[in-house]
Structures are given as C-alpha cells and as structure tokens.
Image (cartoon, rainbow, N blue to C red; front, side, top):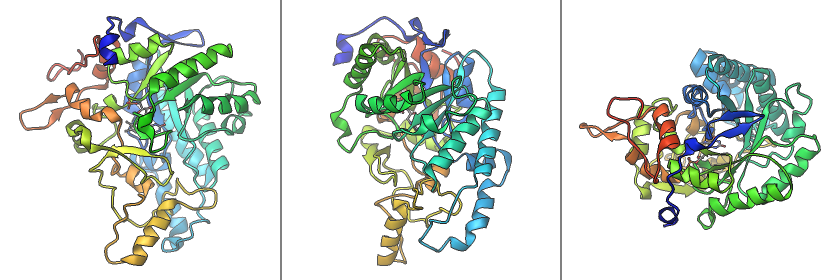
Length: 426
Ligand SMILES: Cc1cc2nc3c(=O)[nH]c(=O)nc-3n(C[C@H](O)[C@H](O)[C@H](O)COP(=O)(O)O)c2cc1C
C-alpha cells in the first residue's frame, strides 16, 4: 500500500555510498554462511563498484573443499576418541590452524578482486567455538592479516569485539561495521567501541524480513524495518555521528532501496535476490527449491541451537533429521562450556527411541549448514520466481549476479526484471 503512495521515478543508481572520501554503489551483498555468499558472488559486487561479503563461518571446512586441505579431518582425528561421549567440553579449535585457514581463504579472494568496490567478511559472534574470545580474535585478526577491506560484525552483540582487536596494526584502517536490529543495541555497541577511540565505519540495520538468524524474538512480525531505520538515522544525527546507515531485510526492488535512501540511509544490504544467482554457493537443485517456494513454504522457527529464530524453507532436509552431534569435526556452536543445545535435544530423543532418531526441537546446525540442508532464506523468497525465467522443462534459468545488481540500480516503480533468456545483462 505504502509502495503505491510513494511511487518514485528515482533509481538507486542516482545515489552513491561514501566511505572515506570514495564513492561506491549503494548496494552491499550481505554475508551468507556457510559459503552461500561465495567468493564469485562477492567478486561481482566489487568488480561493479559495490560491496560484497564473504562469510567466515566454518572456513576450515570451506577451505578443505576448495583446496583439499585437511583441517576438518585433522580435528576429527584428534578428538575421534570422544565421538560417543556426550561431554564435548574438551574439544578445542587449534587457533593456528584456524588462522591459517582464514588467511588462505581471505587472501585468495583479495588477490582475485578486480574493480573499484570492496570485499568485506561477515563474522558472527554466535560462533562461539568453545572459546568465544580466543577464536573470534583469531578469526578477525587473520582476516585483517590477509587484507580484507572490511569486517561486518553480526549475529550477536559484539560488545567486546572492538577491544579484542584494538592492538592489530590494521585496527584503524580496516572498515568495521556492525549489524543491529534496534537503536538500543547500537547504543550499547557505541559505548563499548568508544573505549577504543574508534567508532564503527557503518551500521547495518537489519529488520525482521531478512534471511539467516533474526535479531528479534518469535514476535518478529510485530516489527518493521522502516521505523527502526528512521530511529537509528535520527539517533546518529542527534549525536552528531556521521556513520553511514545501511538498511537490510526485505529490500526486494530498486525502488524499495530508494525508499531507504530517502529515509537517510547511505545504502542497502541485500541477499535473498542473490541466492538464486549462478555465482551463489548454494547447490543448483537447492536454488530451484528457492525459486519454486510459495509464501506458505517460508517459516521462522527455533531449531537453531543459537537460540535465535531462523527463517528457512519448511522442506529443509535438516528439519527432523537425527544425525549424531558432529562436534569433533565441527563444533562451531559449542559455548564456552563446551555445550550446544542440539546435544541435549539429540540425547533426549535417543533416550526415548534409539531405533528411530528424529530430532525436531533443534538441528545440528554445523552439519546442516555445511551440507546445505538448512535452506535459510529471506521472507520474500516466494517472489524470486518473478526474477527468473521458467523453462520448458519446469526448471528456472538462473540470473547472473550482475543482472540482479544492475536491476537494483536501474529499475523503477517497484519493478523487478527477469534477464533476457540466455543473456547476462539487462
Ligand atoms: C541464505 C541466507 C543466508 C544468510 N546468512 C547470514 C549469515 O551467515 N550471517 C549474517 O549476518 N547474515 C546472514 N544473512 C542475512 C543477509 O546477510 C542480509 O542481511 C539479509 O538477508 C538481507 O535481506 P534480504 O535477504 O531480504 O535481501 C543471510 C541471508 C540469506 C538469504
């Protein structure tokens, strides 16, 4: 309704995102773990002059697949004796190996980068890895060592993250941003960051329609990105803080983005429309599931052991799967006491019915994400079929990331455009 009233002929390309005196396209492709926002996707954004994200979630496993290294196998080998034990508290990440994997991945992305844009890395605080401060510091610092342009701190409050890395030589030159879902969370972060005499370079305000974990409770539907963004913009202006605000979550068309620019944002962060692009890391058949989804297929549930609601397709194979906790190989969600809620959920089901283990309360998120079995998605995934061509065989021809990015920049009137059949650029 609001869309019809505020119809605008302005296009997103009329704006630029300014960072340190340089202009970028006002489009940020959001981080999507595990390796959904793959290298190729981030590189397209940078090549065209925008900002792309890679994700640091489960990088040792990602690097193993890319380079045939053995980070996961080595860790499993070390802790194999513990596989049947419900106590996972002794499972620790080798920080040297973690740093090595992160540097390998980030440096290869940065070496491949072309164009005037930037590549950032998304770091989720909720990957506590049985040693929250040590592993987070290692992940952040090794990404900086390897030349990452910026770091987006996400999924968690990150109150200690600035001070964790303040001694790193790149602390003041790397772009540091934070994802918040309320002005309250932003105030807390700013207070902590002030102690390091360094403010965030950008703030991403993520609303309840985003993909991945939500910064809201199960009452997410009561919230709306527009007023939250307006509140953040007004707060920063009142405080005299010139920090670019980037809106995220449900920005599906170029005109949706323009609405946020007119609200005072410096850019938008988008993800859902890129999930079905050829460069996205999801397997081809999973991309087809995303395009085919209808509104009723998109659910928000609490099966993530992080405790945050997670949006996904209801046919995600991980729902109800009863695999044994895989912490010896992965263990990214083990808290500082070596505990993950999936272990409890799994044990409770095994105690009741060891013959048929189907766990519905929680899911083994590490394994599920690594194998692309949790089909996390944004609310507007059901609109993706407007953006792809249906072929005679019933499958959809997937758009290129360049097409989608250009569609954000140039489309007007809340329209989206499919690519011309077999053509890359509109
Ligand atoms: C498939 C998928 C996976 C995501 N994974 C993450 C993630 O690992 N970390 C994160 O901070 N945000 C994640 N997000 C959120 C996006 O980075 C982005 O902020 C948001 O989805 C933008 O809204 P949109 O999808 O409606 O465009 C994910 C989103 C999608 C669609």
